[in-house]
Image (cartoon, rainbow over all chains, first blue to last red; front, side, top):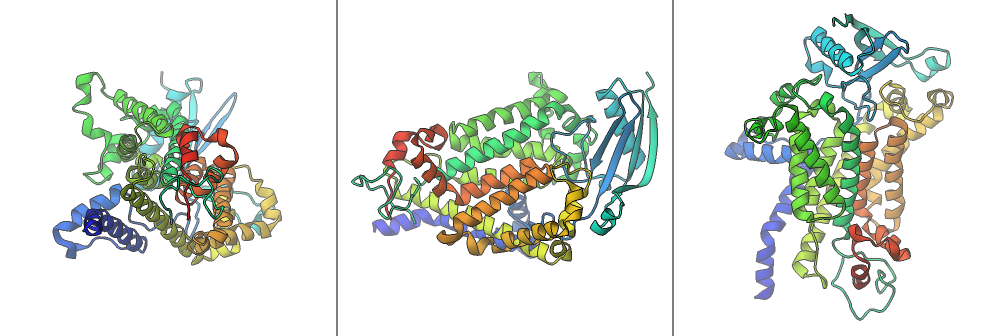
Length: 165
Length: 321
């Protein structure tokens, strides 16, 4: 009787563990709650999102590509150069007073660059003019690097801003 | 498999009958909380000086925009904007308040102060903050949430002699964490293996040459020695795909754990992604490293300070196989 009651007491937690295991296993293979789940779909999706149970866990999985970048240049002295990248955080190097973001979400790139320049001027009052460039970074192959080629930026849009005050 | 304490055992403090070190059932939870707390505190301290540029309504990516793009039920600072002004916390102060509370709770998590409730509060606050500054984060917040979720589920303190139900729950949650790590690494490894980039070393090369990754690696030497990038890529694949097969058997566990920890330290060193590295190391140590920490504590009992359990408690926690 004792064994039975203990098993019954453990059952809900065991059920939770099993369901959680199933959710994360199938979630890792891109399973998502579909319409067949009816009214359960929303709560399952909410639970899985909050607990980050559903995968896939394909960080840096193929391919690794250069992303979008915003490059900031201000004339000195001393000259200021900083690059913000897409998606990846440059920890402890948030020098311009703005941080990377998923630039691809922004259709209004000029506005994004204006924001970046405003943040820059706020953070660095000593600079009067800033040049902000939006583009892609092209990484040469190792062979090309050995023959002297270096990482270069394919400029998409470049804007200059002047402090007005 | 862990069993209840054997008080008659007079052998060395943390050694079982077979001589193998078996940690007390809650040590893994303490280790996980300690590791997650340290990793996230490190991240939070890095963010503090730039908080107003990251998490305000006027940030480069305004929080209002981030919050709009999240699921409507995902917790966020915006939910509290109607309440906080009543207590003088409007605008930017709201973010500072949430972040200050989060930072203090991380310290509480490290020192194991009311571990269950602290873990829950940190988990919720992390979601609220992540939901409002999503664009400023990368994968680290996702893994941090996973780790904090297990901190919530993990046992707080198990009275000795360990109660069978508490012990059972502790083992069940730890197994779930281990399973999560197995699925996570295997999935990541398999996905990477489909890309020729990882076999040719191009993935490593592309990653470290990008201007945002300012690690300690000399790119020129990596170009001069192409084999190093190939080796790094293939080692990553081997470690991740082999994770479920080599971390579970006790004979290979210590080696594989060391390999995984080294891989993450390498990510920290060469790609400057320290928060990610620390979070992953904390998850791995929580899932598979408790035995080795117990060994360490046994070798140097003066290290058995409060976050890992009091010395006396450790000495009583003599488990047998």
